[in-house]
Length: 504
Image (tube, rainbow, N blue to C red; front, side, top):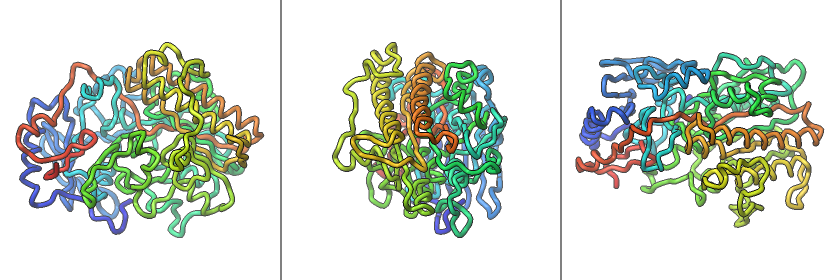
């Protein structure tokens, strides 16, 4: 859904020559191994261009219309089921665009350019590209490709169908309206649950005949590959995830992230039901044209205040719940998209306080020492996730830091370890498996606290991620910024792929 007043950003006439030159460079055969495609907006239509073809399309009142194509149409396959389950993914490592799929491509491309600070050109990296200047991560995300876009989506408990693992898919923007409908939140006058809502209620997983839940507890395993998660659950290596899957419905083909398939952009999409181009958290970094400055959201210094760039009117699950029940309590544990929450981890930081955080991870429960000791990222994420669990369990027990709390109508708990580990080793590595085992044990603590609070039978649970994670090829490295700079073009490349022409 496009905001009524939105005018899609498109390349300014005075920058068209620069855009043509940039495209000429990006389409050079030498960059084909790392550049999957380049996306652009042209006022009345959008284009995806590759080294062997292009396609143009436009938005209509009823959806999207394909206009024309040259060579091989890069967006011809928009299927959601490709490369699932795990053996299929592993048999098709680093899929070339000729065999890759790009789910909901028209919609997720168009939404990005609805924002006034959208890039002039959006470069999509190939599935095989290994970002050597980011430390040579074996796991990557951010692109349109199905494996990087695909997040797990498990929903279970009261009010939810017990259908097990189903061969279907959803979108991350569907999570918020589904949660709000499940709880019985009052819809807005237009029938939606959130201002500017892009998602839809997934009635296919709900069964309200036995009544609605009084509570919803949500878990987010950042950057988790669902094929890996579901496989480990099936083999008993993630017993708490197995338990959730056994008492509800899981989308085998996942929930598709919005472009860019990046952390905070899609955390915010999950909680607000809006695409990044509509809620305003465009990427990990972008260029604010109106202010003439860089916006960075994914740093320790900026996360507590990242929601300051939300588009006006954007609502969260928390805000919608409070619109219906102004006296209920909601909690956001370790989640930066916390607008409207009664309790938030990041409120401590905004007030200049630091909640209790262990000095180091040694001896913490549910931590794999084999990786905690040598890996800085695994160590830090273990500390952060332990803190989040302490807060969630404390709140569910009624007391945290000498403050008493009522039982939450809605609680969201974010876990970061899976993203750190799957970046470091790739989604099919032992460090990735260890991160799932550790995170599974932590959600087990929260589920036990729900049981001890006597609310389990009246609770629904949601488990998602913000995007997928795909293993790349260490032999395929390179930086498109080098030839662009050598050409003399003036541009900014924000968050690796958002090209802003004519600015330094």
